[in-house]
Amino acid sequence: MARSVWKGPFCDNSLFRALRKYKNKEISYIKTRSRSSVVLIDFIGCWIHVYNGKKYVPVKISENMVGYKLGEFAPTRTFTGHSGNRKAVRK
Image (cartoon, rainbow, N blue to C red; front, top):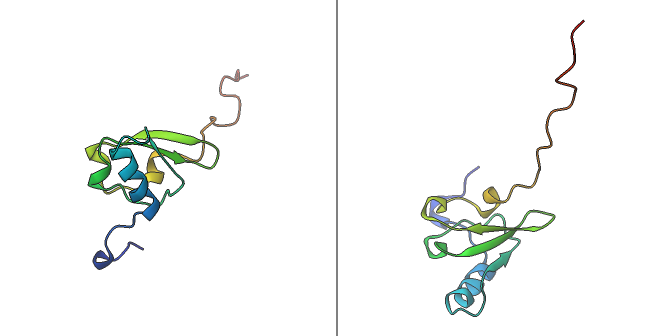
């Protein structure tokens, strides 16, 4: 179920505090675990490192990402390929 319109998009307060430090050049990137936060217009041009459960994935925020959640840009599962021998010789 989607979030109601009157509440507005969710963004963690720690991201706003980190964004203020990023804009003042106190830090070179923002490190967060808040995958459910929505990318806002203020984040355009920022480097945000999003935690995927194992490591922090660097994400450069662009205009096309506004409105999506941060977790969509840091996949949690790695595809290793389908099982089975695909090059089996038929008899």
